[in-house]
Image 1 (cartoon, helix red, strand yellow):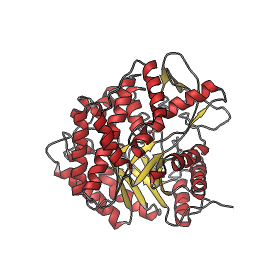
Image 2 (cartoon, protein in one colour):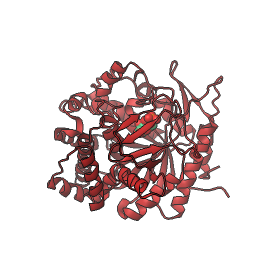
Image 3 (cartoon, helix red, strand yellow):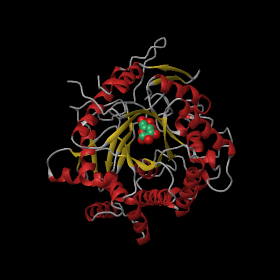
Image 4 (tube, rainbow, N blue to C red):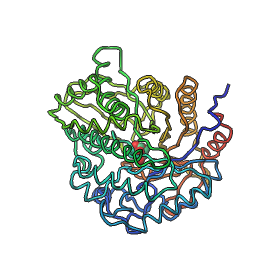
Length: 467
Ligand code: BGP
């Protein structure tokens, strides 16, 4: 029998400002670290990306046409405050009002993220979230948005705190390109969770209308074997990437088990951290105030014990089999040759989605409700005279939606799903050959073409039946 989803289940498409808008030097926008980082790398440019800055009306109209009832967008902080703080850029403010007005006109609900990897350059250069001044600047920016964009009902503070910390300070594939620095990783995780908590408290104490949550990347970890060593390795990787953030979000402190793992990882990597007592007072206050949790989930990892030096190769090209991930004090990610994976070595294993959902229900019962804010398949789509048959993407989304349907049947309160991505976008470390969209973008002409998956998604959204 075909699996179904609840009648009020939302079907959305996800985007992010820097990956969709282009126009990085237009409309009074201030700089972000990525501008310079990408220029130096010389691999690809963030302009014009999908030119959402000029084409948002067309994209939102496509949502309506294809029964996509919600869209995830992020506000580019530097369109509002070009320097991160201080003077407001009216043109940027107007741009987002126009985007939200178009959403209202087309009956598409916007889910708005305040920070999707794009801290203003000057704050970034002063340490990004390692510097507590950035926390204060972020909260002020959030407050401005809450007061200004009264038409928004769904707010997320951050997109993917764990990938921010690790891509910036472990893999070094995001600016500032630092590798294996666990002091920075752990402090960044903590400080961003503190900024989240401060923002949630402000939102609730200010009685703003609507809902607020955070979007976490939660990639389920499994031991590579039943050995005690592999189980320990999986536990350590889980503690850093999942438990640490969920404890911060829903307990407002880190449990003893979580801290045992963090201390072990720190010891192995000569790292230290600085958590202040008053941080936990703020975090505890926020812990029961999250209206929802956004989960980004694409893949899971099987972890084997590893006690050598750290060694990572990030597959940012789609050369299948090129990923290497071995981290001192944690473990090694292995391929399971019996499981399918994408050209970027992302394991397709929908049980990972089911398991993470059940775990949240069991371990953090105050989660309220969940939206899957990102899931989808990076694929080298083939374009033939305007026809894009992306069957592998349909197969991927189908099994993940089925896992969500199973979790709902088993009592998890999941209210919606956003495919990553609405249209093809710019990918931070992969550029333009890793496509995710329901709509193909010819980046030369900026013309949109619905893929086979867009038609399939439309039927699923309308019938709530996973065909
Ligand atoms: C998430 C990010 C997105 C998006 C997506 C796909 O981590 O929130 O911004 O990029 O992953 O990742 P990638 O583009 O690296 O394939």
